[in-house]
Image (tube, rainbow, N blue to C red; front, side, top):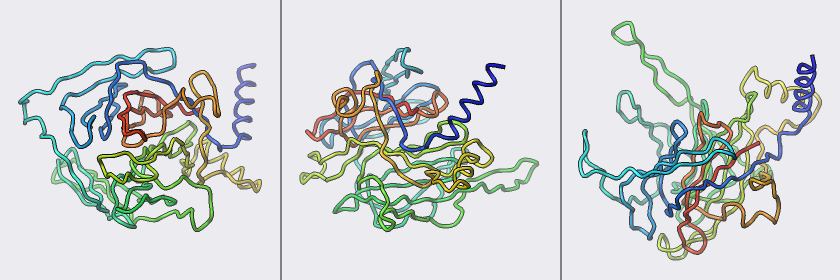
Length: 334
């Protein structure tokens, strides 16, 4: 009976609490330093796979795969290993080091089953590089980028996705991801609404906090490009923002939003807010500058997937001194 009452109290508190601002804590990953920028990071089954990048400007690193077993909470520890590249592997050779430049607006998807590329509708606005894109459930979201003269921002571009089922020659059917219509844009500058500053080479991820509640998390990035191009470092942001996505239907989040709207209150849907961030010990405000990741861009980041759907892992990046950061962090959203 007491457990039922406690559950009711928790549910009532959750119904009354605002969804903004979102709170989070940074936790340092205590493992070997690995300095680099412009690399990739993917999380699979609790492991972060780090590949590529550069330590010196425009000089790609080796083809070794760095693997970090992520701590699943503040009390567990990380593990680190390196898988060296081989000169030849079954099925092909190690990819050549290469540098690709240029800015475009096209969007492509790769079907891992058919091993074919498919073109999706081109994104709106100026062609850009360093844009931030994430996929969430049935939508693609885009923010920012560098258009050749300055950083983009103030808008969220959205492309809705659907599933197209095709009947095969036999009893089996095939499904393909398709675009549902064209891109549409939420322009916060026209509405004079609060939103993140213009930026490129930032992180953008979709996370869930339970009960059907979903946010886009935008972190760090470059706000002013370097006058030296890729040989130098520009100026970077050190802030983190949360954008509240529409809730999933028939969930606690959708019921809460409907209740707030019926009471004449704003649910927070479709709005940005600066995230309130603390370190692992709970320190906030000006006290945490040296205890959390510094301003940077060109880093690699990813959600933690099945290990923790409300957390993001970040590694490395380039700071304002043109130095490659060597640290790894986990941002745990509360």
